[in-house]
Length: 241
Image (tube, rainbow, N blue to C red; front, side, top):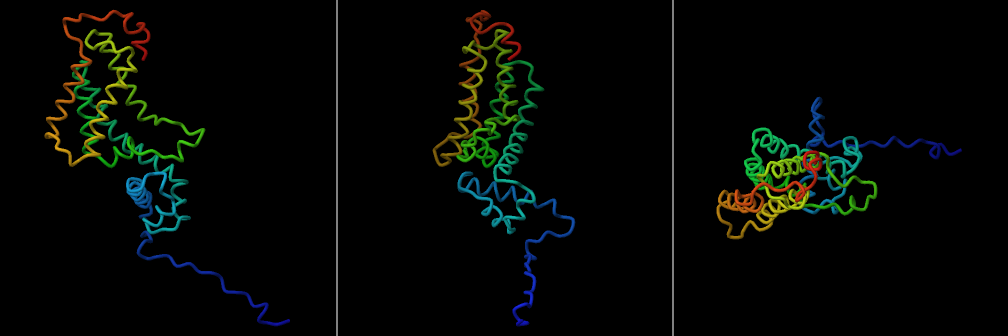
């Protein structure tokens, strides 16, 4: 038998880039690097147009190495959204804790929400202004984020309590009122981010004007009197939310 034919080939070797190899003990930094790369690519191209291969290349690692930390780009998106909502939630929870009066609460809540969106445009776009077509197609994907749901429920509950106390107008239901005011404050943030070159008035003046307009629409005047419970909902619906 020909000796050369039976000769085994040398094992394959792989070269690890020294530039991107993590120093011993600093591997914990890699997930944050991956998330930063994913955030940048999602914002540049849209979530549905980004692949894990592109994210890995941006970090300077192989796609296989990326899967050590994250199973999919959807998992990365979830982590980024959760982090942004926790940051927003901390600001809104502080408002909820310090404002017992429903009108004071709404004024402070609206202002904090708008300022968060304008001060953290990347996080805001990622949570509220980007949509993942692939995720929509997943029939068993949960459509809501529990952190975001809790923040919205807190707003709805405080509006319902304000209506029950006779300080806020009846807008059909607490859900309708909460969705209406959320849409209004989101609209201001979205337009400011989408059209930064528009001739906007100074941001603090704009926020004050917007918040005052919303409060004028929902705050009950003395002349209107206390709302009848039947005009809003049952007492159980108001208190239980």
